[in-house]
Amino acid sequence: MSADLQPLHTFLGIPRSLAVTVGARTVRLTHATAQDLGPEILLYSEPDDAMALIYQVGDLPSHDLWLDGKHRRIRPVPKSTMHILDLGVHGEARLGPSYDSINVHLPRAALKAFAEMSGSPSVGSLDAGAEWSTIDPVVSSLEPGLRLALADPDGNRLVREHLIFALMAHLATAYGTMRIAPKLMPGRLAPWQVRRAKELLTSDLENEISLAELSRRCHLSPSHFSRVFKATTGLSPSVWRQWYRIEVAKQMLRRPENSLAEIALACGFADQSHFTRAFARRMGATPNAWRQGEGAR
Image (cartoon, rainbow, N blue to C red; front, side):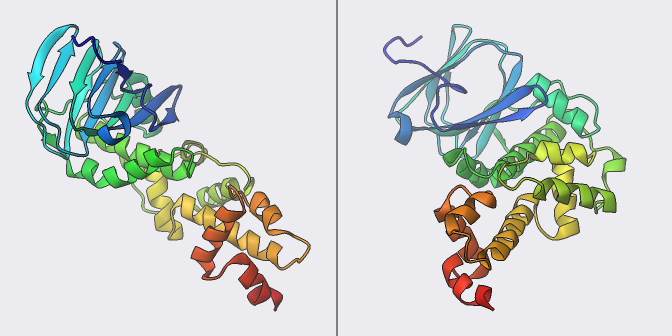
């Protein structure tokens, strides 16, 4: 194995990363690029009771791979290729001069917890079929959103979780044993579920609420909850909550004693600039302009 490069852990050592809790375990994503980390890199992973998804955002030239010390030369991998690995062995890969991949660490316990939330038999493993040759259009369609989430890991939590749960649902059904139970298939939320979801989304605007918690309180899987919430309300949970924040902000703007900074904080925006941008996108005018016009009526 190579000794002249400082190794980086594929799932813990990459700066561009994010994590989502599923059950008692954490699903981790990283985005490794030559632009960020240099033209040559040595990535490694320790043995773990987990699976890994490696998705090539760009073409990957031929490179060296070691599994438990045994060397293999891997042929070039075209962009949009994904590979599912069992992380039961120590692995090292020397990449260069160009690489661009999204790497997903999926503990088996997290897959099991996700299947249980979905009312499905447990998913113990995933199988992509052909090594370094699986191209999945669903995963490819999720790639732009995953890259945006990885570029801003502190962004909207509901959006981030929705993407990860959508990816897990697809992988678990396409390459695992998970099946959606027939009782989860109706296309709308029940009235009590709508009330509960909206209560949770509006009760504490200053703090985020996870998609996992919303779906759990409505007794649905995260992916199914997101789908039927949008079918019921016309908006995703995150967009609905943003809309509600703007509506609360409009009421506060009608009172001149409320400063923009105070309104931004009370409505759960990161800062006044974030509030101004979000309000302008929704209303077509900045908060100040709206306050002087519509808000003054």
